[in-house]
Structures are given as C-alpha cells and as structure tokens.
Length: 409
Image 1: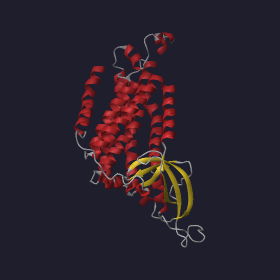
Image 2: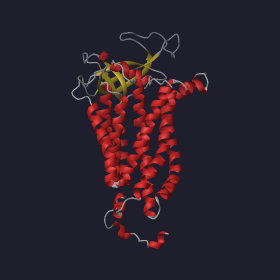
Image 3: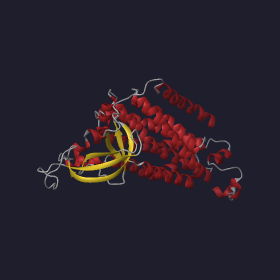
C-alpha cells in the first residue's frame, strides 16, 4: 500500500518541484520598482500640536482649533536619528494631525525613509511609521514556546514546516510573480511544494499523511477550478487599492486576475491541511479502536465526525476573510446604494468568490479524505505499521492494557 501511494504521489511531488525550478527567475536582475527610501530608525524627543508652518514662518495671533480661519493643524516632531548616515543628528518635521494620521509622542521609536540626498538635510527624511520589531518578536517567541510545549517534537516539526513555508513564499512565490511569471501557475506550484513539505515534515512519512495529502490535492484542485470559473463569470479583474499600488510601484503590467486566483489557492491551503489531517487521523483512530470495521463503516463514522468539523472550519474561513475585509465592509455600508450593489462590487465580489470557493473545497475535503483514508487503512497488511503511523515507539504499547479478541465485538 505504501509503495502504491508512493507511485501515486511521486509524480505530483516531482511536478511541483519541477514547476518551481522552471518558474524561478534564475539569473534575472531584481525588479527595482519605485522605492520609498532607505529605512532609518529614530526616536521622537518632542512633539507639539500647532498650525502647519513652513520653515521660517511664524504664527501670529491665537492658533485656536483647526477651522477655515486658522487652517489645518500639524504636529511638529523632533526626531533623533539612531542609525543611518547621519546617526545622532536631530531633525524637525511637520506632520499632518487629526483623524486618520498617526500621533507621535516623546519616546516613540519611529522609522523614517531616507531619500539618499544630503544626509544632513532634514528634507531628505520622511517619518513613515512606528518601530514594531520588539513586540512582534516577543509574540513570535511566545507562539513558538506554546507550540513546542504542547506539541513537543511534533510542535517543533510544525515550526520547521512553518519556516519552510515562509521561505518558499519569500524566495520563490514573490520573486517569480515580480519577474513576470503567471501568478496562478506560481501559486499552484508554490502551494504544491508547501503541501508536500509541510504535511510530511509535521506528520511524518506514513500512509495516514499520504491520505491527507491526496485529499488536500483533490480539494485544492476543486477550489482552483471553481475560483477560475466564477471569477471569470463575475468578470473580476483583481484590481484593488493594493494591487494598483503594486502596479504603480513595479512600473509594469501584471496579471491581476491571476494574482487573485493565486491568493485564493494559497489562502485555502492552510485550512485544507487542518481538515484533511483531522479526517485521516480520525479514520486511523477508528480503525485502531476496532480493526474489524470495513472501509464503508470507517467512512460512515469518519463522515459523522467531519460534519461537526466542517461547520467550524467553514465558519473560520468566512470570519477570517470578513475580518480582513472589515474596513471595506464599513466603507461600503456608508454608501446608500443597497446591499446588492455592495456585495456585487469588485472588492466584495472577490472576497465572496474567495470565501465560497474555499468553503466548497473544505466541504469536499471531508468525504474525499475520509474515503481515501478508509480504503488505505483497511488494506495495510502489517498491523505494526498502523502503530508506527501513530508515532508509537517500540514497546510503548506494552504499558497499555491489551484487548482480547471478543472485546472488539
């Protein structure tokens, strides 16, 4: 059975790896785009709210509040550069104040964009954002510790798979798309490689993992087909604010619909992995509890488990996309054009296709993975292999009470 699974899956793994090699921009120069400037760190030493004045101007009279007479309000911040070509120099910048603009206070660590001009000239710097490296690093450490404490060696393997996933996206998916490769082809190739690496690294090389891989492949293919058909039928262009900014920065055309489809495929992969691994594990546990069950009985029992799981998984996917699109939902709700017009707008229609195509794939993953796992597990001839698939070390089963044959009935 394992040899058969290897024969079935090896061509797909080879195809994914070959596609990555062919689509990677070997030897091509990196796209430059329109850089916003070299990042330079700084610390705010003072911040004051007042009128927007150019250097050398003086405010006469009462400043008052921002209104038609006194004009807009600005915050004047003095920043000491903590690195870069003019480290230690203090500069003063006038920044827009009010709703929709960040408010800086003394002691804030900020990031500035250095244009490359005279480093002693304050106009060569623009305050961009806050520094967030420390809190994000601490959160990542807490996350990794929680995963390892609960999952132990399997949790460590999952973290390793997560690192590999980030490397595949950062070193292959992004460069390939930026160099003009078809985004959908890049997304499929990258997702395929991530699927094989992540699942086998986290759960080991076993028939159970192979069943989850097969179920993921079938469901992911269904999501890709549905997304392609309905994005074309809904005439989705994939153009939104971020994509328009990307095109403007890149300075060349890009397949925006393909970029949308690639995002759908990659985004659905994580949820699919969860569903398929859970279903395959459920089948193996049911078979371990009662080896006399036929594949049909295993499939029926696993399907009942999957019905409960699929509801929460679909809700997770919908809520994740709704949360990401919350600002767009709020903005759309302000326009008095009716719910139908809001839902069929370009941005909302793209999220609907993304959500529903992914949800259909998740629903299909339950019966597909369950039947594949049931057919595989009942055909494994060596019962020891079943124990090894569960990660039980030799001799570990001796501590558990053994059932007599009549106890399985």
